[in-house]
Length: 403
Image 1 (cartoon, rainbow, N blue to C red):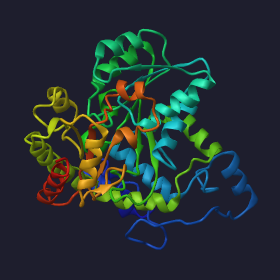
Image 2: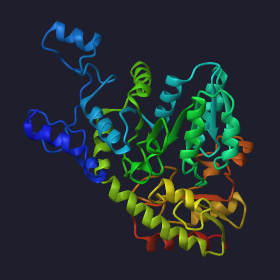
Image 3: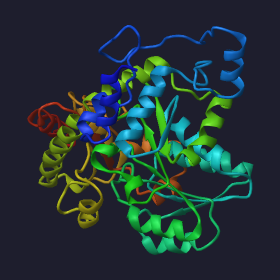
Image 4: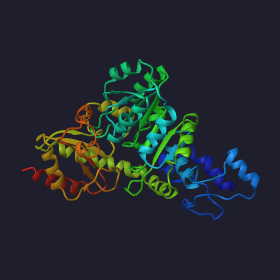
């Protein structure tokens, strides 16, 4: 490594998040490239048999096979770890792959998992339909009920899991309080930080043990590729690494390169998403067809004080309920819009709108949807970077379609 590069590496540890998001983790090759290089190769060659054996058996730090490691993926991991304040990071093929890897690495038959009701539909499905049948006990607790968390964690629990703010009801878990409960019981606390990203919220600093990302969302920022990540201490990431390498739920090098480009603008985008989402949420509150607006940046949010303590913005996702409490009304609103994209993805520069009860949570049983607060008249909007005036006009088209 050149002396200048070495000095830069030491300097970056003291730099601000927006600087780290652009420069941390890069290791310039002999070609002296300025942008992060993309290594599209399935394997790596060695100068001799001894070096090759050391790489495979003794893990001497050399890349051996793309399912195991890749320089571009490693750069993404180093950069995201710096942003989250984590010792280590592992990248996966998708956000659900990150959740799967974490559970497989840290849970065994007979273990107990406590999970917030406010999670992505596929996350609950993974636990209830698959892990439970392999001997994992699952208990669901209301997202905001600290007494319920306390009662659930009073029994031996291997892992506690939450997503905050919740998807799609935008309820918030008191991370510091639940972290204290988990630490007192020796329970591993895992937090999905997809909605906020490290720009707005840092769960590890609030006591969480592991942080999970669907990199597909805000970390990319343009809806291009799939990916996930798990971050935490080296000791907790090592078993995750072992599972990923054996199971093959590995992030591709190309996707990692795309995420690196996304991280470069993450700080700017998250602030812009938050500002635009707040404006749209405030406008929605004034609409006669709306009964309730859920957004973490609203001063009227029932957990506004907690949100101010543990995050620095409201993020880009909001939801609202219609006074006409029917699926037909929700669909009429969606079909009446034109600018917003009808898709269940989020974290894109393009605003998306969906009906969670028949999309993200559509495969869940009705009792589970009721438990999670996913009603037939709930609509979720993931606010992009278009002009707020245009988004308001599109929502107005949706309200007009209600009749």
